[in-house]
Image (cartoon, rainbow, N blue to C red):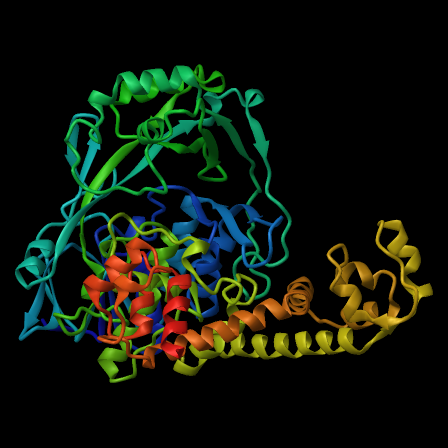
Length: 624
C-alpha cells in the first residue's frame, strides 16, 4: 500500500496539534503521527496556559485561526489577567486548566477537522531524496509520503529522564523516547545539541494543610483567550495556594547537591535560566532565605496538584524530606517526584524565516526541537510551520510575521537569527514594539492576514469588521461629544478628581488616569445609550476603544519607530563604519559588530547583545 499526503506532522504536542490543524484547515490532506493518541496535547509540565508574554502568543494563535485559546477557555479552572497594575502593553492573560479536559478538547478539534487523519506510531526516519524530504518511515515498517514534513518531537528525541542518580529512557514519565531521527539529521548536516528541562513533584492536596497557605482565586473576565464569543469553561473554578521554602528546606537541599544530576556531572546539557530547579535557586540566590511556591490544580475532579517553583532532579527521598520542612507540607504525600529530562534539539539558525530547514527542502521544525520551552512558544511555531508546510506543498508564498506584527514574529526571528544558548522563553522585554503587540488587539493585527490566506474563518473576519466599526464609532463619539460641568462635576468630586470649570470634549475626561469610559457612562446618558447598543462583546470593545484613546500618542510613536526600523533592511553598512572608534557603543556591541560585520543595519539589530540604543547610534552616524 502507498500512503500519500500533502503534509505529515510528527508529534502531537502543542506544536504538532496546531501544525496539523492549520495545514488541514488550509486544504492540505494531512497526517498527524503520534506515539500515543491518549496523550495528544498533554500538559507535560505546569497545568496552565499563558502568563507574561505567553498569554499574548496564545491570543495571537487564536487571532490567526489556531485552537490553543479555544481549548484553554473550554478547559479553564481559573483565569487571571496578570500585570493589571501596569500599562496595557504588559497585561497578560493566564489560565489554569484541567489537563484531562484539555486533551479531550484538542481531540475533539482534531477529530472534527476535515482532511486530517491521525496515526499512532513512532517515526524512526525521514525519507529524503536529493536534500528534499519525501515522507517518513515508522517503527511498524510503514512508509508515508508527503512533500512537506513538520517535526514537532518535543523532548522525545533520545530523551533521558533523571531521578537523582537513576536514569531512565523517556521523553516524559511513563513514555518512551524516540530514536533514529537525530542521528539521521546529523548525518544530513544539521547541528544537533542537547538541552535539559524539568518538572516538579505532583502533590496530593488532601495531605496539605491549606490553612497555612495563602489562597489565590481567579477573576471574572469577559472574554478569556479566544476572540470568538461564548467560549466559556463549564468547569468549576478552583483556587491556587501559595507558600514558600525556608532555611530548613535549603539546608537539606544544599547538603544533598552531590546527589543532584545538575551538580555531580550527570547532566551536561543546558537548562532554562528563567525556570530553574530549586537546587539551582539556592545556589544562584544564596542570600535568599525563601522562594515562593504555588500549588496549582490539575483537574476539576482530581486531588493532584502541581507544585510550581519546586522543579528538581534530586533523589526522591531528598525531595520528600525537604518538602516536609514546610509547615503546610509536614504530612505531604506525593503522586510522583520531580525529575529532569535531557533531549536533542536542532540549532534553529539552520531554519529559514518560514521554519523550513535550509538544508532539507520541505522539512519544517517547530517547538522544543528548536530549543524553546513552553506550550505557548511551541503552539505559535507549530501554527506557522503548519501554514508554511501547506504553502510549500501547494506552491504558495511563505507566511511570515514581522517583529512589529506579533510576538510570534519576535519568537521566530530571535530563534533563526540569534540561536539559543538555553531553552528560549518569551518575555515582553524581548519585543521592542510591545505597545503595538498587546494582548487586546491581536485580532486587529492578525485576523485579516490569516483570513487573506484562507485560515481564519469568515466568522472571525465578520466579528473583526463589526468590532472595528464599533471601536471607530465609540472613538469618534468620545472625541466629538461636549460635556457640561453640571453633568459630571458631582461624579468627579465624589472620586476626588478635579471638577470642570467649563465644558470640554469627552475625550479630555477619558484621558484622565482615574476615569474610564464605563465609569463616565454612568453619568453621561448619551454615552450610556451608545454603549448599550453594542450587541455583544461589550466589555472587549469598550476596553479596546479606551486603550486606543488613552495610549494613542504612545502607539503612534512606536509605529513610527517600527516603520523606520523596517526601512533599515535597505541600509547597508558593511565596510562603512569603524566600530572600534565609536565610544558611544558598549564594549560588547563593538566586539560583536566587528566580529560579525553585518550587511545591513537591520541585521546588526538582530545580533545578540546589540540593543535598540546601539542601532540608534549607528543610524545617527549613517545620517551624518
